[in-house]
Length: 271
Image 1 (cartoon, rainbow, N blue to C red):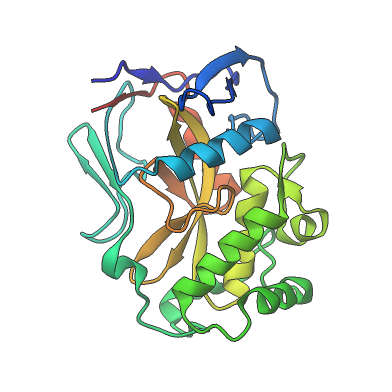
Image 2 (cartoon, rainbow, N blue to C red; image 1 turned 90 degrees about the horizontal axis):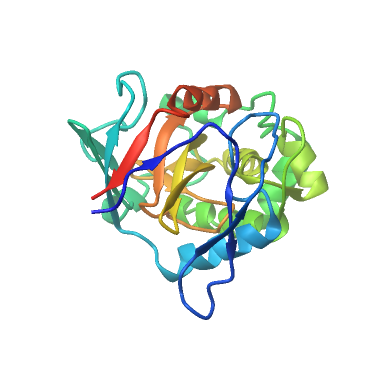
């Protein structure tokens, strides 16, 4: 049983040394970081994000069970929609299971015309899926592909390769990220969601905690609707994203502020 980890409000992420020799991530040093949205992203520095990508690729989690304490859990979206959700909260214990099987198989072809997902297909101020540049890029990536899962995977790989992982400045927009090709997880996610929607795949942003190296860190990723809502991490090129991604909220950047009540109080114990 792991020692409880406190999700702290000091904005000081651990930096990790190369684990190629030992296969372990080891805390290197701590230094404060200030961001417009005052939560810590594990991809704020290229060297750290490269290590995280190697870590997640080398040991993806199929299941994560965590005991939550220190806060009132009501009001947070720890559980998803439907009985088959990848996250299930029982009492104070949250179980996360990586998406698999029928969840990854869409019952539609591109582009989706299901009005149920009109919000997840529509353009937004920071997710400009109707911009000609975004639509053209989506066509270049997806081509003639009509399978939503394969299209979602193609877009995740493209964003991970083309957008340099570094600290973002200001509030990101998809068009800006497409032009500058750099940013942290928030920039990766808004561009991914815009490209997915432009290709006709219902998509939305998600945010929560990423478990890696024995610690939890703030992170943002995406969800696309296939057979159900499926987590995708375009920052670290995971399709589907593994169980290390513990979702707290979905929606735009403003919804990520819901994470703030957790800081300094939430304790997580991996079971």
